[in-house]
Image (tube, rainbow, N blue to C red):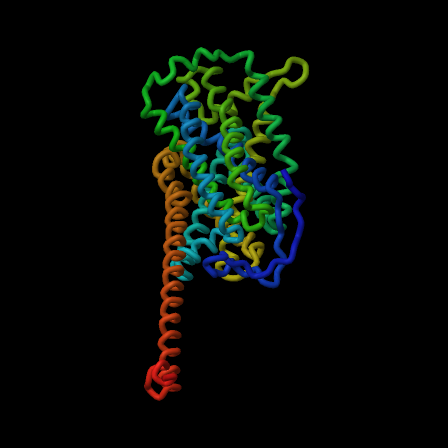
Length: 425
């Protein structure tokens, strides 16, 4: 893969090509570019740890030992979501999320929808802060939750103020270590696992599997935030092809966490655990070398939460900045404070209530934001393109008829009202 390190280039005015819509306030400014590798590492870093600790548990509550089937079905549908989204990105490579909404729905309606996306991204930041604070208070019960909220949020806000290049490079450096720790944890606990606990397959039928797959489909729908990153990606025409590979990598990275707690604790106990993948890590022990491996679980969770918070905070600030014509870093601190305030409001809510919301109502919110509105926007852009092409053809035909009519009038004036043949004769 021809992937290059991030570099800075001077950006001009970006347009959709056929649509003639403005792509934000890029004229006269510098635009940072990131490689395909960096882009996909941002995606993986932002969803993996949070998905392992939260989405795997939510799917397991529905599907039990068949969670791996829910994952497979969810990834197949997620593959279609990812591929269609990246095909549209390849078609309009400099069209950000805010630019897409304005190109499809017009300035005012598109701006209103972009504002809703900003609120949605900040809500996800607050939700992540609430969950990571709840997790950390289990590990450190004497430390106030507020300390965890603002410590993680401060790092995420700092990364956003430094721009997309610092954000992507940070993830590119840390992610390989997190992947190595996750794979190591799964392999080190394999001696205590009984894989017969996965049998019988489909014991509860297909409905729980379908319900669990919605959790993973919602996870793929959340990737709409990365539409704010795509205008900076080099070689965007390669995104659809590598998007297929990305989905396969996500499936492989989630497979062991989906089956690990089941084959280690059994279906009943695994479904009742608040953080089954973390509890699995707690049981790992390497005699005379590492007696407690759960510290690596804490590192996975906190660093993964930082990646997720930073990505969605950047999505919110960049969309807001493009909407009002300002630099994205201008709003990093105010947006972080809003998300932090929302997280503090969520702190009294129990983890069970949050999980219930995320496994029911939130699924449809995520699908609407990540699938429904983007598909509608793509359809509107196609309709606008057809209408513009039709109008252009009508104007061309009309101008041809007018030109022919004017030519005939000139000939009649030159011949005194008689036909040219009569003049010759």
